[in-house]
Length: 116
Image 1 (cartoon, rainbow, N blue to C red):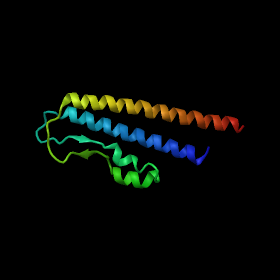
Image 2 (image 1 turned 120 degrees about the vertical axis):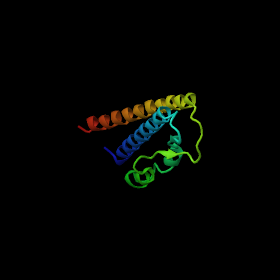
Image 3 (image 1 turned 90 degrees about the horizontal axis):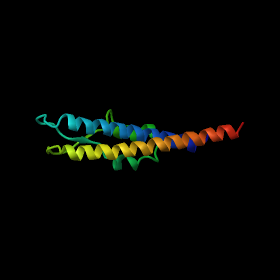
Image 4 (image 1 turned 180 degrees about the vertical axis):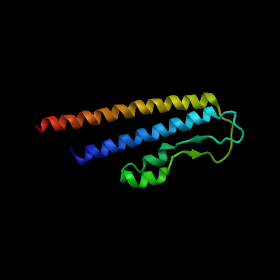
């Protein structure tokens, strides 16, 4: 296995973690649609994707903090249809990330088997 394969595997894993955290945040938004004072939460991937070339366990984990969930600055009504659409988009991202992870693992298996 090369460092590049391990790095790609780590990035795919981290992306899946981000997607999972976003799914939880979007679900919480729907669950709290009628909660007085609730502030909508989300994860902005663009904030994290720029750091994907840096060491994974340092800068990104520092930025994410314990949850990585961002609260919106001002309170606004939660639109359930909008939240459901975001959940669908997030689900597509998860599917792409799992396929990427599968491709990386297949490549790593090929390298191991060729090296025998």
